Amino acid sequence: MNNWWANIVDQFYRCFIREDRYMLLVSGIGVTIKVTFLALIIGLILGFLIALCNLSKNKVFKAIGGVYTDVIRGTPSVTQLMIIYFVVFASIHWAKWIIAAIAFGINSGAYVSEIIRAGILSIDKGQMEAGRSLGLTHSQTMINIILPQALKNVFPALCNEFIVLIKETAIVGYVGLMDIQKAGDFIKSATFLAFMPLIGTAIIYYVLIKILNVGLKKIEDRLRRSEIH
Image (cartoon, rainbow, N blue to C red; front, side, top):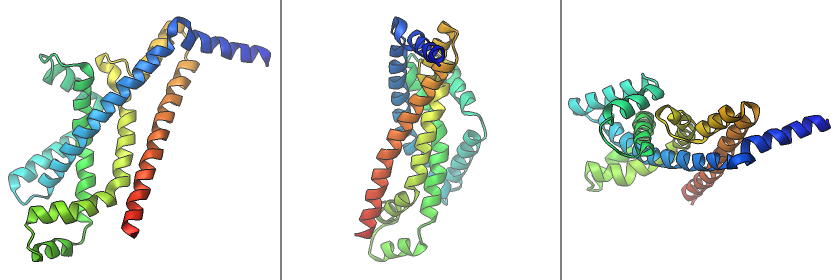
């Protein structure tokens, strides 16, 4: 038992304390949060626009929305990341994390658009008719009546997409970014130890997502209380 514990302590020291290797993980957390946050904003904006395209009666807009959703959902996110980084932005000297965030935002937008579209379609058509009968335009009715109800309905699904997005960023190492997963891989290669770096990265992801879950749950509870009152 003593030997087992001594081995664990030694592995912990070699993986995280020696040469301040824990700072790689700290830096990786920052990269993961930055990429995820910017990708979320891009995904929400794109998702909203594509949802409107898919719901539009205009054939051109509808075709654009359909092709975008079909292509993005039908190809792996890692392939999309490498195409955007090594092809689309190959000659543009932006920060790596920004390009990665754009790639993940484009990917997330396809899924967010379907979530928002489903939320809008879940609202009774009478709501639109009621808004129009009050003298509101189609756009005003959509913004002031339909969308607030739809977003409340789909908030849990959007939260789930946010959580998935955090975990998907673990592939940014393919374009040379030192995120949490890449930092763990670097420590594993430097120490020739697999258990501690992998468990460490798993714990970090779990804690991040747990904190996010708690925050999102509080927001969801407030939305529900506002409906009651």
